[in-house]
Image (cartoon, rainbow, N blue to C red; front, side, top):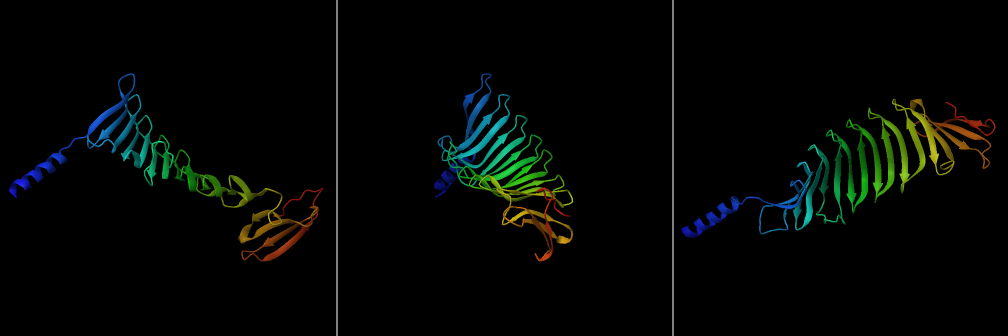
Length: 251
């Protein structure tokens, strides 16, 4: 019994003292390593750490390999050592990236976040966030199976919404809006035709009042301006015959 226990302890000790085995797979002309595999078990060549280097010796890319597939995270670096990209894998990915599900975070060379988004089957899905070089949110895009579908929003550096578009299958449709830094609507426009459900103009005024413009006939010879309160109840209207076919929205 004591002998068996001693053998067990010896095996555990030897396993605990196992050292990493680094295998240089490819080198640069100057002799520096270009690609290396780091094995925790020399007898198992399917599980290891994959490292790729710049010619100056700085780490360029690193990922854990499990059963000959990328696993957990893929990390890319700038040549100054700063993190460039992190891909958090939802499941192991083949070396050819044929099936790729992950959350991606990209970084500016300064270390500030540049963008983050989700890939499913190599296609953008969900909301993508894009930041300026100071780390401030600049734009968000909604995606479905690789196509812009939902909202595209641009922001002022303060975080206030600057532009708002509705998109479907990579194309803008419906109303688009531009705002000033106080949140007031300064411009409204319509994509795909001159109107949406008869309305070609829409603007938010003070006190939660909304102004809309509708053509009064099929010839577009006059416009009906309507004001609605916060409960969407019409409170006023104005018939505008225009000036040589031009119509200016009242304030």
